[in-house]
Length: 152
Image (cartoon, rainbow, N blue to C red; front, side):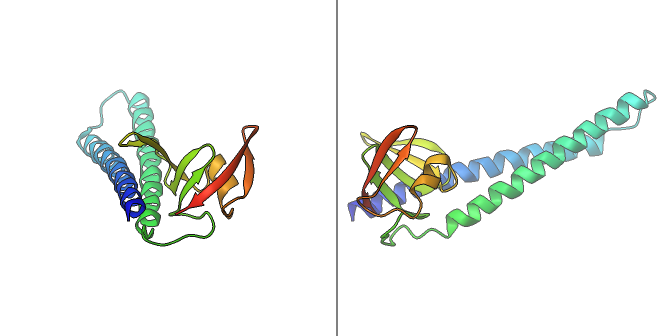
């Protein structure tokens, strides 16, 4: 039960993180749209068009980021924290000889109580090395052998 509680806490932290990222991007997009709509054409001409083009490129970049983060949240929402795992996969909490990793989204180090956990993506360099491994298996990351002690 304690482990499920830790997974739920880590999951909530990941969800809050991704929701904040979505909110930040939405605010940035709204500000861009407002700025674009309130801008009036001036006599400067070329400078004005260059500015509008740059704004449009920034807006497109932000829209792409938004779509990526929304997709990341959709994948996060599919995770079942109460599921038991035999192999490392998305949603598993992996205890290794080199730390504890929650395979969800990449937000990095999270401290709960006096213990450190790393929330990582399955496509992160270390996540790619771990995915599909079972308890007792060892992999090498940054020239360091790491053994999987448990998968929850």
